[in-house]
Length: 439
Image (cartoon, rainbow, N blue to C red; front, top):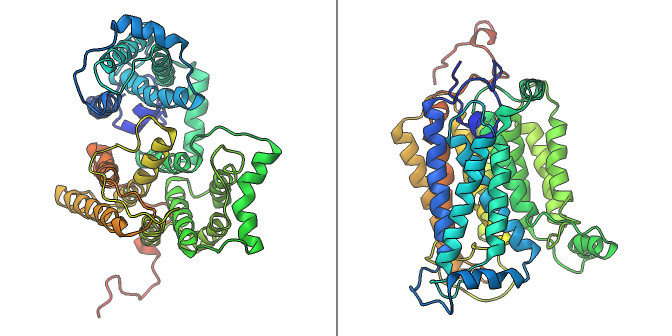
């Protein structure tokens, strides 16, 4: 039996009925292939940036690659390469559309990723100031292999697949939309926790708690804008989470997960927990309890959070012009991945809320939303040119637009959303109360 759930195919989460045995539908394969081409374009663009040259390399390309083996590679560079090529391997495996991918498909996917990486590294020899690295080829190939393994969940033993299906049925509502909501929550966690590596020493724990302590001691002021940023984000994410989870799943579990993400910032390298984040979580959870599953409080909270984040002052007093080169400040760094995730998740959350409106989205509504999203993100970046310490960047409006359009690329999310299980039935209205009251 075919199914039309692209995020099931992409993430390997099966629909309830015979999840992994059915081949991917044509719509699923088209959806994944579009994502694959987009990811390939970004990979080529970032690897060969700044696209200067061509220049004559100092020696043969093969000699440069061999010489690079003695070059020391930082852990952050290795992790960055893995994070770029793991999605590539996953998308390549899913693009094959095989119901039961095996070792042959995995070997082909790994070979494609390795060949792509080797070709791009050779190309870097002709692009100053880039330098080819054989270590990058190895890590990129390993990332493709890991992504391919993630894409082989349909080849897992039947009992494992059955357990995954039972877990999803008991926790998530049916359809593609809940999996897109899970992606929104994941992007927010990535933005908060990059570079993900903990350093659980006493000195680092003290460093992670330093801003919270200094604010409590009165050594540094409490930032209302940062509090609004975190409070609005937690409120919006809590509503997104409750709209993707089954009604019988306790809401406190979702709130605890959001709190644990913020708490994990304490041991993570280059991350700190602030009093604004802690109190923002408390305020967001309290308001989320009142908001329930309603979409408009979440949408308003998202707008407040984004505005508070983008329009707050930075760490210095410098005014900077707009950077018109897409992804200029996000290339080859883990902080760049966090920056992109931070720019994507609010607008992806808006798309999630819009897709859950309960009626089919027309092209006009999608286009109007795209114009509004791009206009808002672009206006916020323009305003940052007059705010000290900010780095206005054209990348944010571009990824905001992509985040809004992504869920509308497949009919499964353009169609009307399933009915809200907590919404009252029409017959449940009090007797004698008009269904369409007059003004």
